[in-house]
Length: 93
Image (cartoon, rainbow, N blue to C red; front, side, top):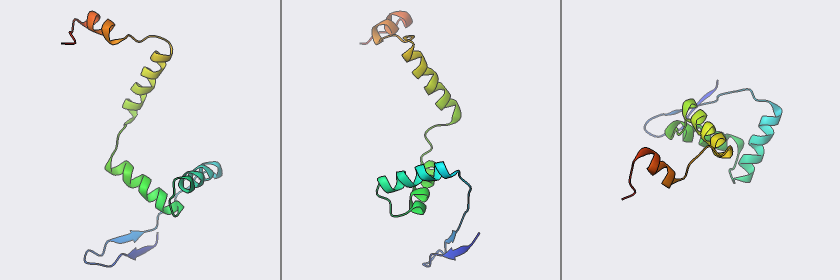
């Protein structure tokens, strides 16, 4: 890894990180950052990672539950709100 400083009071170091990706995945990354108006691949990756760290929205269990619900919906195994109120004895009032 290489290091640099950003200057200023805190001397927060910028560190270069390398990772491996398939060529096809890298092609997808490039299409994405260019299509969304980012200035570079690095800018896009930093933004994406920062967003994932600051605002984690799904963990694996939540994603599995979401996919299961989608499958049930496609298979017609869901109920509308009125059916749910009747089944679970709740009221919409």
